[in-house]
Length: 205
Image (cartoon, rainbow, N blue to C red; front, side, top):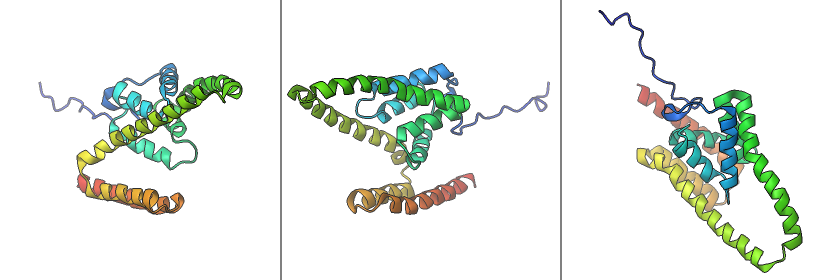
């Protein structure tokens, strides 16, 4: 029998709207619980644990997709990880998914911090507590540096000179020259978008 009339298999959509590696779409409860676990584990920042859960554990995104989504959230007003929860949840399950991820991210730590704030107001002058908080801050810096290197890995693997030059330029402008963030973004964003568009046109051709 001829196979010419058989329907062609369609390639799965690799856009950010779908999870990576054919992972099943999470439900609203799964989104809530996943982001709740991220927030409860996120001592010193949730980004480290969010990337680990979304990319490595659940495989809902590829490393490149996570970087692109986080880059978008980084340029939006408000806390980056909160923006990420809304954008990620909305892409997978619509507005309800965004609300589920957002609530899971903020509700548990808000309740815990309310209790801790009451305790700190009463016992904040205890020397042991102050030293413990100083140690936690050092660990938080280490976690942040680790996730930055993990997010850079896909860029370094491609060894794209244009991308690396843009990354280095933004780092020097903000970290070394101390230029205003808004001014750097006004220049960096159009350059990044233009460079990405040109590179993808070349790949498509």
